[in-house]
Amino acid sequence: QVQLLESGGGLVQAGGSLRLSCAASGTIRRIDAMAWYRQASGQERELVASIGSNGNINYADSVKGRFTISRDNAKNTWLLQMNTLKPEDTAVYYCNALITSMFSARTYWGQGTQVTVSS
Image (cartoon, rainbow, N blue to C red):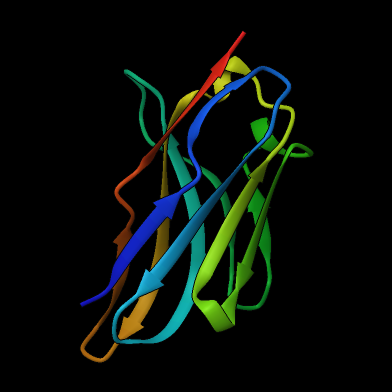
């Protein structure tokens, strides 16, 4: 059984920083793409950033230059460093990964962590 556990959300003032962490556990053979999504109240879930197994990185235009995604393959973890936060970054953030386990290859989601940015 594979699980993703997120940490690091919270309340911060505009201009501040937060770092989100996601750790994958279980019978993992390989983790390919890792990503962060977010969903603001009343809106659809959107991709924030992704990082492939080859290190290829993509960001949503709205976070370019402010957010940084990174991964630690040895620890099966990935981070989202969020700087210069804005009130419009307020959302529930979800980590996501394509994981090959002992029995299957599929996408997994974390439980979500709330990020609130006050103006």
